Amino acid sequence: MARAASAVRPRLARFARTAKPRVARFARATAPQLARITGPKTWQYTAGAATAGLALAAGVVTAAGPWDSTGQRTAERDRAVALEQTGGTDHGSGSGASGMSSGSPRPAPSAGAVLTGLGGTTAPGGVKAAPGGKDLAGLLDPLLKDDPALGEHRAAAVVDLTTGKHLYGLGGDAPLIPASTTKIATAVAALTALGPDHRLTTRTALEADTGELVLVGGGDPTLTAREDPRGLASLRTLAEQTAAALKKSDVRKVTLSYDTTLYAGPEMHPIGVNDNLARVTALMTDEGRTDDSTSGPAPRVPDPAADAARTFAGLLKRYGVTASAPGPSKATARADTLATVASPPLSALVERMLTNSDNDLAEALARHTAVATGKRADFEGAGAAVTARLGQLGLPVRGARFRDGSGLDRTDLISADLLTALLAEAADPARPQLRPVLTGLPVAHFTGTLAGRYTDGAAGLVRAKTGTLTGVNTLAGTVTTPDGRLLGFAFLANATTDAWTAQATLDRAATALASPTA
Image (cartoon, rainbow, N blue to C red; front, side, top):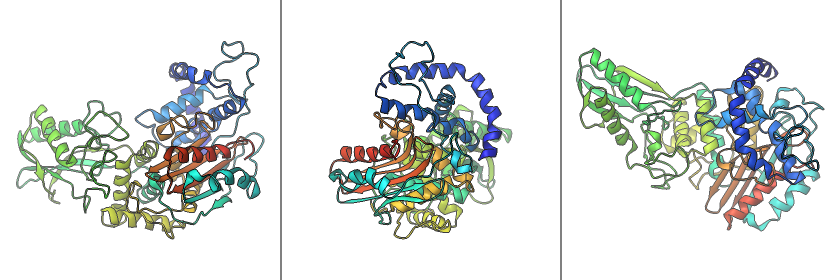
């Protein structure tokens, strides 16, 4: 990690010189929010975010892969560079600047970078030993043990990600319904099975003996038909390249088919038709969304594969090739590949999945884990593949059950101990390929599913995957303490009766870990 940090330092310096306009725009956009920070405690949390939670974006993470096409990590990088100061942050109010009165709190001391301790390097002042036992129990027990908002079944675990030391447990080995924190397991399994540089490829193939053109789905739910692909694989590009290849052979009319045989079994998730995900198929564009959204719930087309093929036929016509009405088929081994388009690398897909809690991507990555490990690419095979991969890593999978990759299935079971073990594995310096599991976690009050949470504290210091189903509230991720330690935590509550109150309790527990007394 130290070598990686040294390698990226020149790039960061160049970026700091070229990013000033974007940083200025970002500072102007966030000025109203920062002006509302008046309490010393909240201010301290937010100050820490600039150098602890967001230092990850300006430091070692630069080497972890390309910036997300949505600008999420670019925004983190801009923010981190804008606030990169060794003595804390003043929220852009520098000496003599308006908006900072003489009675305002002074800049808080900078916490160490999120991953500093993982490489064996210490932040200024050193990385302190993490507390445990009675210290953490005194903070967490009143929330996790005693608060009735968490329902009848609750579990928790906290570990020091630098040392691996177990710091706190409350029924940590009991498997509970994890909801979307399942995606952490899916991410680790996919990255270990496929590698962070793996890409999902969609192609066209021409059957030489029949002249049939087959659109072959590669299991990329982010394949886009939109005019601006924003770094994603483009169906328009695939159509243009395919038409050019056909016209070279003087072919201007084809019989079009589509191939979804990469996956097996039923396409419909057990929850049925639902705005949270499309049918699970190896061919779709824009996750089968019927609006212009890129994340969150949205109505989906009834048959994503057929819809993608019809769109492809229309694009071919635009490029001078007429196609028949498409139908399902299977490309043979004799078919000649005409054109291909590839997704962003798996590292970026994992980040998108975790940040946005993308169910379509989660199911796709679970299926690809099955394909890569020789399992049947259906719900059952994908679950078996994820379990097997985690078991091979030596993680505590006893009692775990994966019925899907997204956590929408209420029969999934994961323990708090397994979730923190997954986070510790992702933080292991010996496993840099798993770092996207940490960098993809939503940032408190900043990105993804945590953008609207932690308004009163721990903004930027908590990075966590959320999970919510009826009667289920979960939270698992990392938190940076004021003295620069990085902790991993998992909180699970089942049989809750008030989702908002339960969510607030879990947020308070994570905030407690970021407090000076932790």
